[in-house]
Length: 335
Ligand code: BTN
Image (cartoon, rainbow, N blue to C red):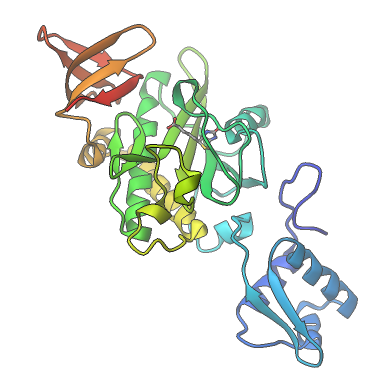
């Protein structure tokens, strides 16, 4: 059975493939075919078929007559079984839908809502043809370059309190990037993740809710990871470009760390409410204290960004002295 189903491209998992993969990965040199067949209790012919399935998925397995097989290199793919390995989360990413390419992981997540998937279900893709950003913008999502996913949460909070989850996601990404790459990110309200004042990533949150009840919060995260300078929009940056060595970043390792951090912060949110998240968000933010121009659907004003509210809204002091609260909008830092 192939690793990717050609019709819907969802990953098809077989225990044998996973065991074969682990077996080959853990061996340094060549392993005789007989030894592998015996270990997996399968025929030589079945082994060859599985080896070919793995090769088709990008695993570089070398075969030498009389010596056997050797895993030469692993593909730069975020296959679910690779993501799951060592993830150690209880909720986040316990169920993963993986697509080689899709329109937008937000669309797939919305389609899945009617199946009532488990909390923490992840829709992960290698490329998007219609990646969405905030305020109707396009999110450029080239294949194998970035991390693009949507996460389905079912928080027991009223719709008005869900904005904090966007801040929670932004904090988690900054923490994970720091842990894996030592690069320090900052957050521009509400959820632009910046490095050197250029955009590294963003978060789009969509709700499936009734007036007073949230069914699903879908958190979409997009991050530029291994994009080359010429592949980036003006004002954008990737981790590869930002890192002093310009070396390729291990997307799998980073993704796992992001998921672990989201879980940690989410459990903290469930236990202690928004307070700790808001404190951490303030540590990463570069908006508070700035003079800003903020445009929302209804108004555009200038003023001083003074604080965020307990529900994640931005408080701006206008020149008249009055405070105005924004739950969404586009912020420009003036100085
Ligand atoms: C923004 O900064 O405007 C938010 C960008 C969010 C992009 C991610 S990529 C994964 C998910 N699917 C989408 O179509 N958008 C989000």
